[in-house]
Image 1 (tube, rainbow, N blue to C red):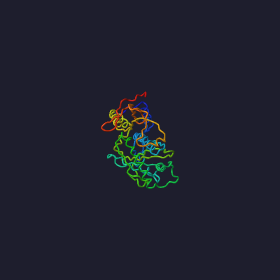
Image 2 (image 1 turned 180 degrees about the horizontal axis):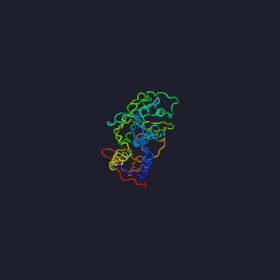
Image 3 (image 1 turned 90 degrees about the vertical axis):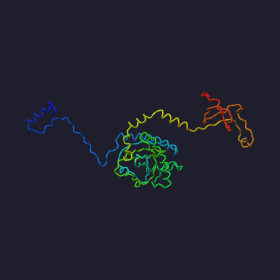
Image 4 (image 1 turned 90 degrees about the horizontal axis):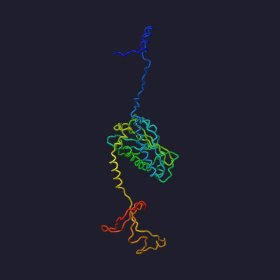
Length: 328
């Protein structure tokens, strides 16, 4: 069945017949569809939602690494996600300037074939080495190649950094990442074809005033099996579906296995340094407690219990008599 013409279209037809014009536009309101050119040399394989999920994952990773580097290097360290973008491996490789610090990382998952790359700016590498060796974290004024000893030191600390990838990726897939090798020349890090698409996640780092970056080069071929899980809806829903009782039991098991220092204070006294120097075997020191006094049981530096001395199975022991109240 043909479409019904509007009055304006009928008038246009009558006008065309009288003028002899064969080219008649019946609907002037039809807009031309905008066609976007597709670049076969650089296909888009990462959606905005997937790149955003990678940013969320590495935001968690950044917090873990910030705490680790601050404690390990004993200097204030701040790591933040700068951006996540997709580009070809050739573009990433051409941006590298020797000497570089490239860590080749195996994700340790049989379904994820291949490796990812961690690129650390050279000034951060020099600063880390200087801090490890007891310096103030200064950067070299003149760039040079890394020595074999420096490579070993960097490999050890990068191995620790890589281990913190496990927890942020847990909601997407289980991985057991490890540092395969460390390269300081970009020519020896050709792990994929130049035209392969990658996701480049850039982390900005401030290490005791020295600014630099961590670049994570993630090939599409490596994470292709889990691409459908790289969206925030799946990521957050998997968190909500986790059974609260299971989480609570994990926390309880972890707390039960935690070791805490316990000590018993029999009594206290004060003596002079001269008296201390003259102490001999058999000397008696008078304490401020009595024979029938309760001992103080300390949990760390906190007084928690009172107890009586005794023997259990042939060993010195104490028996808890009372619990210290909050008012005490």
